[in-house]
Image 1 (cartoon, rainbow, N blue to C red):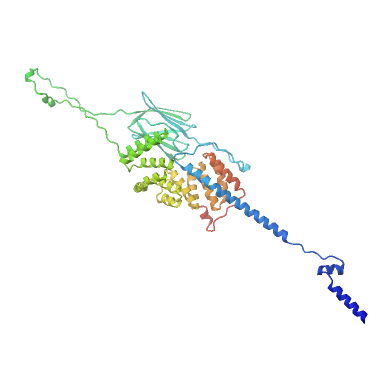
Image 2: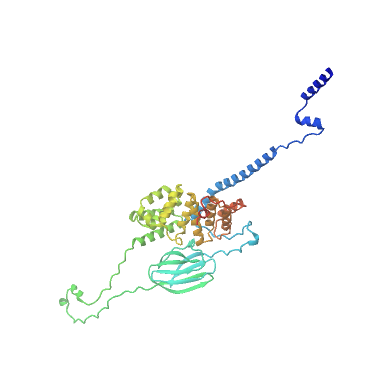
Length: 459
């Protein structure tokens, strides 16, 4: 009996000294149990992948936010009326699809110079274009119009001072070209015109003035009289001899004086004497504070010199003139943007909307101000309207692409950055920025706002 008890005690002792359950199985069966594989490495890999994706997204957003002020500054410089965008040769993008590569576009022609030359027969007008273009001349009593097809609608930087009988030169866009407008002091006669490979030479002369005078009646024969019996000198007035009428100069209107002062001040600015131009404009505005052209040029000069407070003070004195003049509204909005108040700038520019064909700088500023006010849909809409008018303006493609990227339309933005690189008129700095954003947005997709895709596109 004691032997049985000893065996039971020994078994119990062995049971208590057995290892864990897995080891019991190994002890009982002679085989090691199957080990459960830990899921921790899988979790770590997923976590690392998520961190990499988030890091890439944050890096793209940082690149956009860090480069956006530079691009906006470039667009602001481009939109400044004192500095026009230079025309550069088109480049083909290395990232473009080689199977659907567009054919290289031809750089549009432009008027490179307008000169005036006096000679014995009259005034020679020389108009030079960068390519062969067609000219159509229309003569009027107060204006000479020269239509030029397929050219960039802008005056050349090399514009000589006008000479009589021409008093001013301007232009207006027309279809795919423009019309050069020569305001005349008096009616003219076109003596000759010659066109040769895009160069126009026009000889004009003022028509002779017609002076009407009463015919002089023949003097009546007077019998010889002695000196003592001759009538007094006053009696001579009774003769029928007619005196030719005395010419009197007509005083210039305010508009004519305004144009004349602005022309003289502009010539001084081009020659580098901005102080003389400012003095001339200020003295004129002391006499005629409501002159719109002089106000506009003086405010542009003050903004160019970064004298923003002086420009704003001058604008504050002309609230009625700002309401009437789109140029002054544009300058007031420009000051609001520079003073970091783009919302008011947008409101002011939308208060009265001129014709987009004749006021493209007005709408260019509206698009940029809307972008800075985070009204991206409005900015996209205005930029698209400008590009429908002139698709060769590279800075507008850049502005459109920036607004689309900020809206989340990154695929559209990448396509428009490519259009900017292919544009015929874009500065090298803006082209480099467009290339960098095009590369950074590779593989990007559109993420439409929750409201509607239609609203996101700004249509």
